[in-house]
Length: 210
Image 1 (cartoon, rainbow, N blue to C red):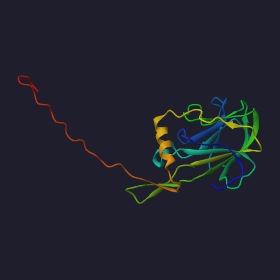
Image 2 (cartoon, rainbow, N blue to C red):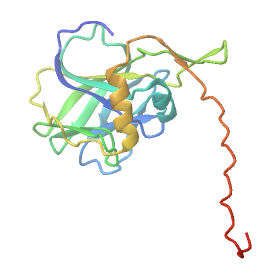
Image 3 (cartoon, one colour):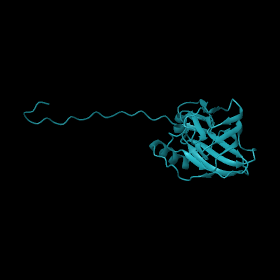
């Protein structure tokens, strides 16, 4: 994605719930959200939750990284990606959550209660996956990047380090993502088949049946 003059409020990697990353008022508590998909442009209305379609959690494991989510404040829309939603988000509690309430690496931004205009942009830094023993490639099932623009000046502040990931798989993904070189294609090597050597039986003691 291109360079923008907007202020970065949050830049984190989030594990999708299946193939969805939730962006919501922290008090939404399961309130139905608007489904945001790259092929379906959603406009207008006031909502409390956005369910953004992304690459799925299995693909995150294959490419060695999670979905990258950036939250900005500002007015610049150029270079942000493909617009998929333009409407208003009711942050009634004053706390914006990136990731649902069951997500171990959920990120929180604290501000004042308000209804803010939001535009969601989608993009792909990684577009295809190719298995090492095949010449064919397949595209990811959804975007690997989400840019959320809160229009205008906002007072939201990211609570850095809250919460810390606890799921071992997420920690492994984070370690691998630190060394990930940006590219649009990922090769995945199939693990080699291994055989276990037969276990040797211990010699029987004299007078004891084996």
